[in-house]
Amino acid sequence: MASKILVIACGAIARELLRVRDMNDWQHLDVQCLPAHLHNTPEKIPAAVEAKINAEADGYEDVFVAYADCGTGGLLDKLLEPRGIKRIPGAHCYEFLAGSAVFHQYADAEPGSFYLTDFLVRHFERLVIQGLGLDRQPQLMPLYFGNYKRLVYLAQTDFNETQALAQKHADYLGLEYHYRFCGSEPFSAVLTTALEL
Image (cartoon, rainbow, N blue to C red; front, side):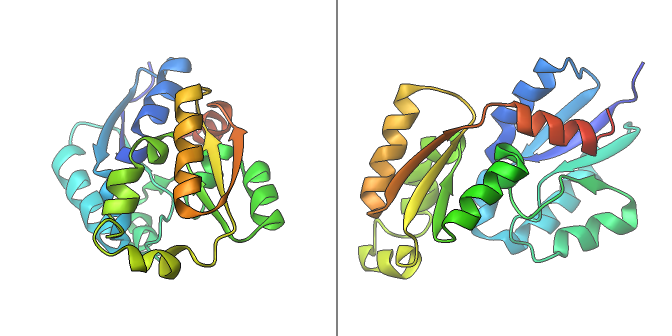
């Protein structure tokens, strides 16, 4: 029987993580999520991860952190490395959800790309518009989005409703819209390698 692993995850990838866990029948993974809004203050991610480790890790053979660096500037690694805890490799979730080759294809073709995942499409109003204060100060739009040329929706699911929402968000931001269905396979492959499953 595989040893029990506590996975401390970003709430923004909770659905995708649980889908991949169930798809692969990884019953030995227990998932605990932190709030997705931490991405608006990435300097707080390491302390939140540390608190979750301290509160939840007893009784587990191993702990894995389902975050990339996520804007912490290496602070997450400084917390995890001395403890021998692994995390998802890379700078952000867009790369591991889309697969490295697909993400770099988009990033190289247009560095001024703003990316959305299924989660961000569904929670755009709360995390982007309200989170960045655009509902209160719309004059900030050029400051935040003036250098972007396009919005790329890296979809994990293939639903017309979320595609329509993503198009609406691109229109709101005044960006060209691109859609790419990625599915669950890229994330599954990254987790399989990172967790050595």
